Length: 195
Image 1 (cartoon, rainbow, N blue to C red):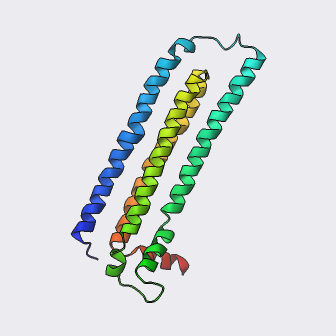
Image 2 (tube, rainbow, N blue to C red):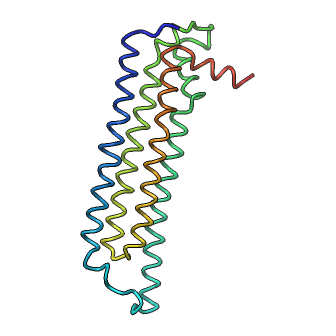
Image 3 (tube, rainbow, N blue to C red):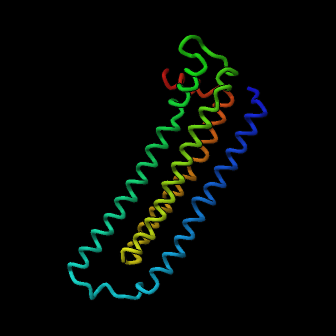
């Protein structure tokens, strides 16, 4: 299947955009948050929690659970929405119906002309995941500001880092999805799954 040069160029630009967004809006803010966390927590890091009362331990535990719960909820929401918005069957159906697939069987070229629907789905998902990653990074600072021990803030940081690994792992899927769409073969994936 021959891919139109304009679509191939758009596909290559998307691949570059995915890497740039992940580096500059995913990893770079996470690195800044690590530095800020250490700066903010520095004076309190040496303070011993052994002298804290049972009530203070309970408050710290509840705050930690609240921050971790919000962080985990964001992770789950990002994971779920991304899976829904970029599901190959769903995007393939949208392309098929846009190309008139409910009335006749469109050709690969006709399907490929609606590849913008796949580009929009991926762009929307990448934007959403980037926002979720930034909020998760900010939760690390929130953990420090509300006087959680550095160890507990590190748990939130680890969850934010795992989320960034998840985001990076999606890049290959996005490339494959877009390539299938611009080659007009995305709805074929949907038909194969129905068989």
